[in-house]
Length: 290
Image 1 (tube, rainbow, N blue to C red):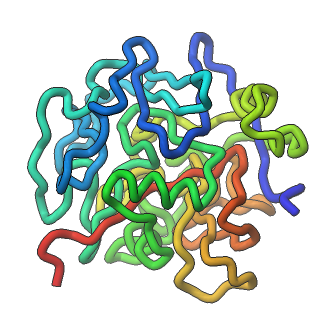
Image 2 (cartoon, rainbow, N blue to C red; image 1 turned 135 degrees about the horizontal axis):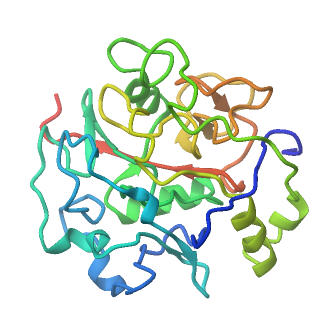
């Protein structure tokens, strides 16, 4: 059913390790694994482990995500990050501002992750994720999967932009222009076999979160169009009535050659579907919302 819906290209960054899978495992640092128990959110804090480089309103201009890498661990868990700055809290946790944790931004009466999961600047976003995986991961981090209305609202902003950054498409502003190559769907269907993981690594072309510094919505959410396609809870009418849809398209644009907009959706799959470019981000109600 997915035979023509997506494209891929070879991921060829010398020395980099690309990783996927294990949505509900806590990311660890490849060169110095963090104890999984230490990365679990503290009771009542309701946010991902805080990158101390990220503060509310930070535009990430001092980030250098090109040095980050991810890898597949033996059990299929995702390991993310490239520096000890990505360890949980970096020794401290910044207080919420505007009713949202510092790892999220506020849009209306809700908070949305700044970045695609694992919601860490410079980390490569998760792929091969189903809607069920996304729900579980967000719940484990005291958040929830975003609704379609929330995601669109955070993307288009108060100006109701077509793209996160404006009404006219700008080439290379977001990661949405990678070339298409054939994907071996039969091989990916064997996930999480080593062969399927190797193929997913080969065709992965997401950029590290926040590296496209101008791919930002008014609210401050990054990479909402292109990069990886994101699961959301369906709240609008679509040709298919699956409870979840994919939104924002991915690094090779949208099926048919269109550029991803804040309204680009794919409603053709059920909650267990996963593919080489399916990811997500999380939302939660803002503290003190009316």
